[in-house]
Length: 145
Image (cartoon, rainbow, N blue to C red; front, side, top):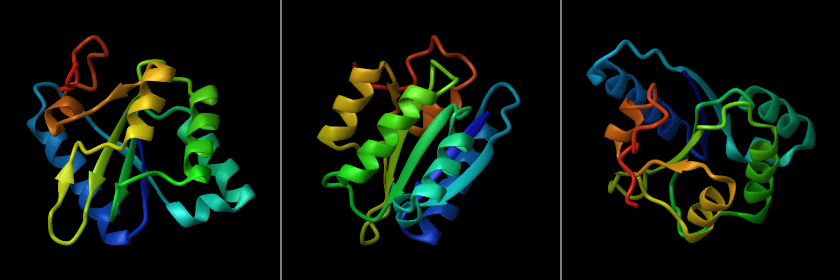
């Protein structure tokens, strides 16, 4: 399984990656995550954004690991739009991990991310148990429907 972690602080990428490993260990079947981290501000550079898009095309999961998640920047939404058009995994998922001031929240979202996921038919993961079911694209991934 391929996961792309888009992060704004390195420690958030590390913690999000560790969370994916823990989820894989709890899964009934053997799940191995190949994690590709990308620092968010790097994606503002056209060449890096293109390279990240190429790597993310085969991602089963795009995980946003951010300090705050009140709203998403327009350039990030643009990158996600381009990814959605190039994605090779139709049952791909989006998730958000918010690191804030000690109040780590997994499964958060923003209005823009929810609308984006719905518009593109993407699964919006709302719990780490949802990630554990990534091998079954027909499961509910722990989302609130």
